Length: 131
Image (cartoon, rainbow, N blue to C red; front, side):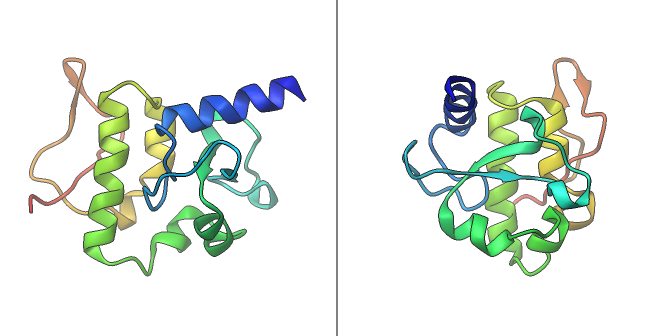
């Protein structure tokens, strides 16, 4: 139980206490843990496949793949989501592996040039259009 609580706290801290999907604040007590790739589709309980979410987003995503959940999002909502992921990556809050999992390429806004990371570029291109 202590290890599970420690993992919940780590997930909550990596998003600064915000839902990874909508960005709204969520308390440690009320946060829910979502599998980016659902266990029913081969996803693991590994830290890079888990994110802090609010109840609304976790229920709305349900057992779907992240790509399916993002499919109906507006470009504005998708851009805000992508900017959060990019910021957390820049701040070292999330790993490149988790950032890649959270940004399926077929639903990400386009960007003029690749996002630089430590003198190189992301292994998987993450793009967005300037506002």
